[in-house]
Image 1 (cartoon, rainbow, N blue to C red):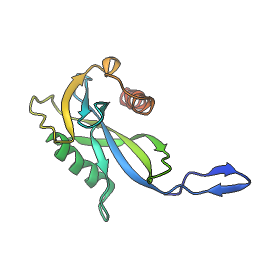
Image 2: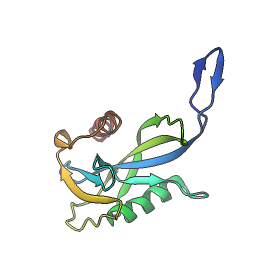
Image 3: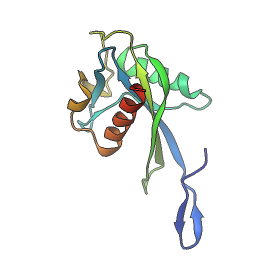
Image 4: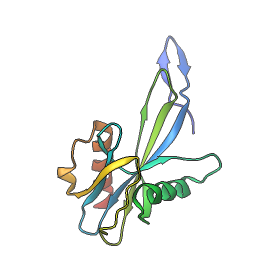
Length: 144
């Protein structure tokens, strides 16, 4: 992947970033899974980083099993975004449309999260702009 290009003083600047994949997981009734981050208390979608040498889809499957205990169908990417950080490596987020064949009461969250909810998309609690946009794109793509 190429870095994000910025036009500053006539020269392009390359961004170095780690890739974080996130899953917007829907059940058959259209409810979406959100997790509460144990450290920051914000609601987010499950997912995480790709380990060195790991294929993207394999990494997302692994992260979903680690964070939720669920096996999901990863359908396709629906949204990407960057988060620039000065003191640490920036992040490139890739959000995927995902589904489960049935809503299971046995979501087993990891220590990274303190709670989970299946919610109607319009009622998804406190998502930041990036996460809200990812949810909107996933909904649009799901309805096609």
